[in-house]
Length: 114
Image 1: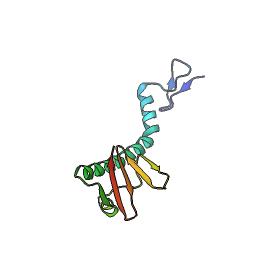
Image 2: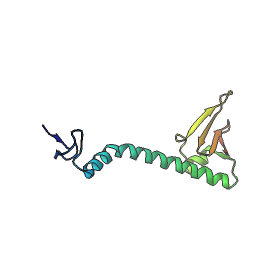
Image 3: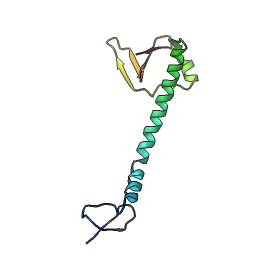
Image 4: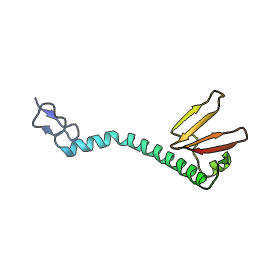
């Protein structure tokens, strides 16, 4: 009883534990399998890079505090950040790579860099 290629269905010759008839079928199979995962990762990385670029441009221009509305106008994505932390007073600081930002009670966002 023979085994068949998971990609093209051709009969496989050789070792009994082989799953593909050739490297091309193996590559096609795995590329298809991980395509959606890579697409999601790429989309998130683009959003993070855009946020970082916005923070970097503001910070390098000397802006340390900016209104939340201005960030929204330049398409800053507040739902996309690399990490967050909350201090003992309940204030949350978000990180986008080497930049940190946090909101105050006046709808302003404070920008810092490590």
